[in-house]
Amino acid sequence: MQVKFFPHPADIEFEVYGETLEEVFKNAAKVVFDAITPIKNVNAVISKEIEIKSEDLESLLYDFLENIIILHDSENLVFKDVEIHELKAENEFFIKASLKGEQYNPEKHESGVVIKAVTYHEMKIGKKIINGKEMWFAHVVLDI
Image (cartoon, rainbow, N blue to C red; front, side, top):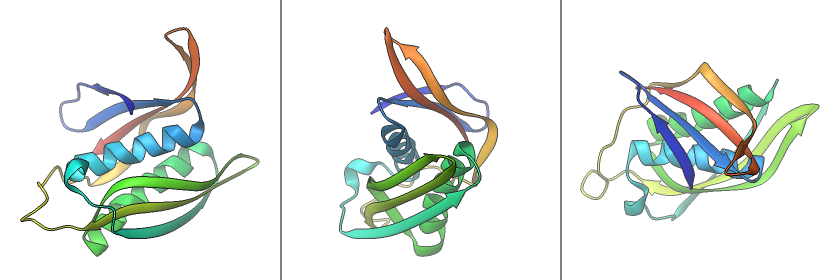
């Protein structure tokens, strides 16, 4: 996973990279997963399907990551992997994905940070040149 963290006094600020937009969404999800509890201790025994439609690309990423936090908070789930089945990012903005993980168990899972919300503050999605290659990126701030 390609990720860069930025120093922030109170939140988690990061940028993820990928050759495709799907890879960027996956990498952003994995940062959220790992902030909640280290994914190395999570087994992929439960699959949760999510479908999200939004008005633009930034909103789609926001809603996607926010759904992960809601599933953790409401169903006490932790995740380790995501499979994106469909991602539309032109004219309409839609994602269909499976989140894979298990029930949080304090005897097994280390407690990470409590993520209050994803923010729109400094959120950006686009392309940039990294090491001479054009890559997709997403810049995200998580309110903790």
